[in-house]
Image (cartoon, rainbow, N blue to C red):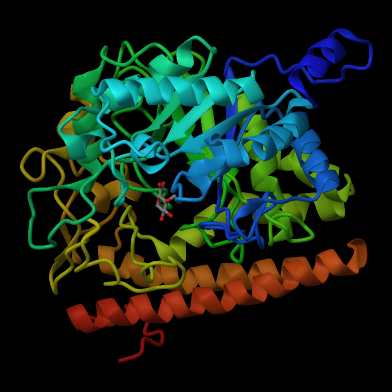
Length: 552
Ligand code: GCW
């Protein structure tokens, strides 16, 4: 729907844009869809929006999608990947802008404003300038002209999303400028149109030498952005991942969240299950989000306390694609639903939102509702038991991030090390080590730094410990690893028998597609069990206290 038509329609009786009364003003879905039709970290088929270098979609399907997103509270959508390619950079240029505007028009009907991911080097890439330096007057003019063009076509565009100085993408730092210099040049161009810049804080050294024990990747976002508080234009929103690493199964909250007094911030989650089972393994993200919201960010505040105060926007990376059931794993639909609901009302619990989804999807027969909800609520813990240990993370196969590889990232350039040897594992991130904990407020720093008070599930995120270290359960770290892996497989087996028992109550296609994924999850959990247990057995030479099978 064209913007002028929309404005008239809004005043008419037919307008049915749901009004969500939320403390979170912007509830944003980011798609990592590429213009060739592939989806970065996508596990649900090809892109809903793009094909072969063009914008290409099924209009009815996009209308269904937009209607659904607005019904769960989403009010902003970005369709193109933050890793902008030469072709997708042209979404703000003359040749693609008409098609982008038509797509934005469909979302507009449902009260959703569009965001476009842009390349920071666009003045050079698209404009033929010799530089993209934010202080160069031609660059400043170029962004202004680009904003004029885009807003002529999409007058209610929410703004531009930018990933710069990150994972081989150029940004202001490459020219000796700050992140604020970079964000502001675009923000100034968008300002008169009412647009914002969503500037991602995923800036870190991705060419680290594993021998370097001083550089510590989790420190990067805070180190880059905190000193710039107060120097961002007021229409810049810093988009900050919930944890300081990268959407791992278990991380503390990012110390950057809430730290800045004069800068707007957005909390970023992942609905797509990159490190959390890739929509093959069952993983209810809502459970993790509830934990994140409950966890502290400062001495006096939890993440939840920041919502609607310092943090007025929530973003998540979408998990949808052209698969008939939208999300690959049918039960992963609940993760998108939960994101919309929790973004609209962060006070909702995982049990509440997942319960809503199960009832809406399968009805309220307790014989179905209760076991399905129970499986979903347990799914995060079970997945963590076989993939991640006491906050370690990263033991995945490189690049695609599925399946176990205990040293996959150990000697890589990405800054992701557990540094296991035959006696100990983990990184000391206290002030005696890398100093990461000093980015937190004093009491939180003390809490994490002290082995006695550090939450056990994060022990190896903050500390380097011998395998013989005794946990509160009385087990050693090593025995905890072994037990978790053996028990996780049993839990997945229980999921399978629970699901099997529901067969009479479910449509056959839903039953069988989930049953098939659960079987794949079981073989994944077994692979993790055997690879990780063998890895630690070989390192330590210590057998399982219960004499279960560990391969040599
Ligand atoms: O976790 C990493 C992913 C990349 C992604 C990047 C980011 C879009 O592996 O695929 O790139 O995060 O958040 O920018």
